[in-house]
Image 1 (tube, helix red, strand yellow):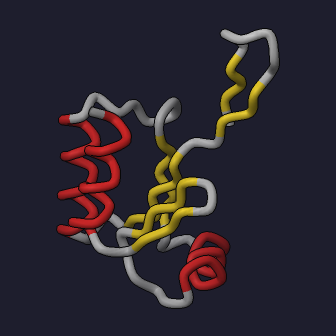
Image 2 (tube, one colour; image 1 turned 60 degrees about the horizontal axis):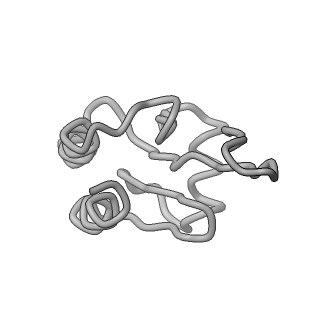
Length: 93
């Protein structure tokens, strides 16, 4: 979570959360696009290891299935790598 203090108000900004696993080629595709878009881990997005039990449970609660990559940005969530890439291109270009 970041705090934007460039205005007179303090605004809390949540980072995109990207649920991935190490052995997922579609996850690598999304991570490569994030890098190409100069998105910074820890600033623009947070990687979440979906292989860890507590993260797996959260993924199931949020999306309803154990599939990665899965992205959450506030009230927006999606699974498909091409959809995630299209979303990131619109948001970060």
